[in-house]
Length: 187
Ligand SMILES: Nc1ncnc2c1ncn2[C@@H]1O[C@H](COP(=O)(O)OP(=O)(O)OP(=O)(O)O)[C@@H](O)[C@H]1O
Ligand SMILES: [Mg+2]
Image (cartoon, rainbow, N blue to C red; front, side, top):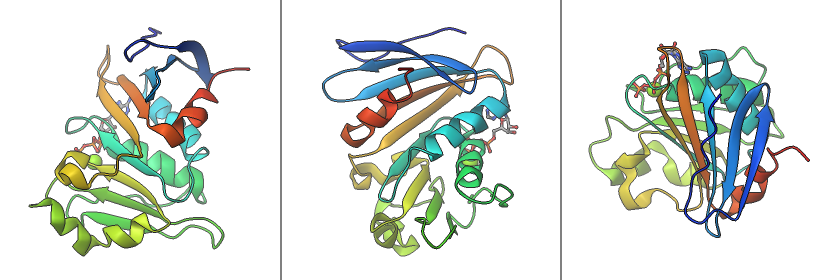
């Protein structure tokens, strides 16, 4: 698997291994970036499950990538890892948001697909403020939010890989994610 550290002037680079996935972590003063090769769909789900275990109330994950890049596959893996494991996770293509109340002691997960959002302010009609008040947000097509997208977040960028079943994932975490992403590295 190829390892591609990212970010200007990396201050730290480490090889990581998560559930058999291989990649690199690069840390800059502002952000921490991790690049990974996902050889199959199950590796995308495994990565999502690994990140789900690092997530906490108030987190925003911006899921980026073209149509069919695997954003919903990632969201499904994330939600199932935080829930019972057998949740139905339909694409919110038409509903624009699906809310998952998991266990009483766990934050809800709000799964947005904003592809069809006409203007960014309309997100408030979907309960965006309530979600930001203590849930975990998974947002497909976060570009639709423009400046309403919180600065403090994890970007998960999915792109084509070297075969039809492969993807590349690039994770870029702002401050609150820096330590958590660095914790993906072996000690
Ligand atoms: N490594 C992989 N990771 C994720 N999905 C994969 C992978 N390989 C193949 N696929 C397939 O690619 C498709 C991804 O679809 P998905 O609905 O997750 O895309 P999406 O990014 O959410 O698209 P949209 O922008 O339309 O919502 C699925 O059919 C899935 O089976
Ligand atoms: Mg989708």
